[in-house]
Length: 632
Image 1 (cartoon, rainbow, N blue to C red):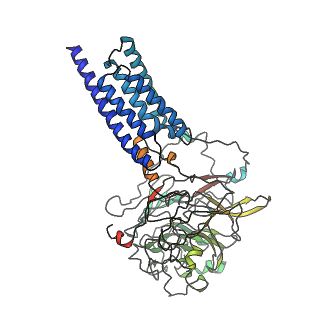
Image 2: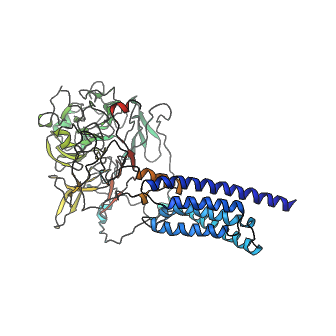
Image 3: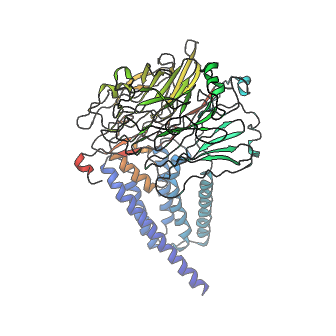
């Protein structure tokens, strides 16, 4: 009975292997034909045929089946080594793992082949075990980093920068910790030698809503002022937390709701008694004990309010019953559905600058106007509206619709009294055939305004005629650098969705590192479009995650989804960076999700090291006509 059972099991497993090889061969063969027709690699068709033949041989129990399977794998290995764009783990894994599995299963079924001796069966089993162990090691290796690049560079140490002092306090009082946005903190207690000993000290529950519609996502960077933390939920529920114990000190809920893009990236902090933009008399004129220290919040339903930092109560005398309506004069906001701030209020002395996210899909979207308010009383101080003469709107005027907006975090330069605005593009995205000169000049640009008046000082565009949704996504970082002439330059570092880093003289908008105008494709273009023939190319800084794509760089966990990805690639328009949007399916790489997005960069000021993170996700897109759009 035991021999009969063993034979039955071998037959069952053999026919199961036949079905697996047959399915794999058919999938590779069918996809391989489609890829070959599109001008792609012929490997997949040949591999499909080979696995179909192998399935027949397994079914017929041919004695040379294992040898043929080994030959198929060796051929695949040779192809993989020549086809991969780089010989790295993640490049070779999808090309070789499934073929290795097929080889392993073929070897293990070798006991059922005709004319195989006992020693042959042992050899097949042993070889299968070796492949199994190799595959197990490959699986374990997936949990470890691969593709690391290490360059030996001379690092200059500045120990003083790593310690707290009057110019470098320990508080995390801004979104990027300091006003410059470098995220550098003068903390030395936790270091590379003891970081592995960290344990959870406390856990705090923010009280955010976790069910229902439009609950949003957590993107909050808490502020730390002394022994208090100040956090916000996606719907602007603000909490003050004891930094040592994690206990709630106070909580304030503005009951903010909106239908789209629900997020709170942080709050602002203002201390009247430390504000050197006010005179002694101005400080003395505010006689109330409350709200000398304020938390400043912009909400997802487009309101602005301030709270007493110690008590969590609305500040008296601010706006209308504690709130300023940010929807006023902005156009068709649909009760904040099409417009609201997604950045936090950036402090400029006793002023705060507020931009906003705009649902930039169609014509007639709300204005992208940027405003500055006095945090003491909520009064509007200036509005930068590029549709108005001199770019400044008068009180009570409606703002110009669908102008470039500022949805991410501006940066304030106290020494130069300038605020730097990273702009988006004027709606709609993806087609700009009728854009006016205002959208063309100020879209996807760094704009420097006089912080106290809103007057324009300079503008530096980093994407011309942006039809890829390449808004400038991150907070500009202020840091002094040395140029190629050995001169110390007060610089602004701006990262982009295109994977490029621009270094700009923040005094005048001139480039510090080399930037050239490089030719880019302008066809096939959408009907009525007029694309820029060149784009700024930051060749003096590293380009990150924007290497040109090829069919060979398409990826998948297995050969099957890699093949499908190759077919989609060959069936799409791709002409490198800035491939024009068109009515044909086209690939946007880097995509509107990044390159580098709103997370921005960090700078270790003690060692002059810049840390950059990026996202690498291509999008396959297509423009449709108004008539076609009605079906969606």
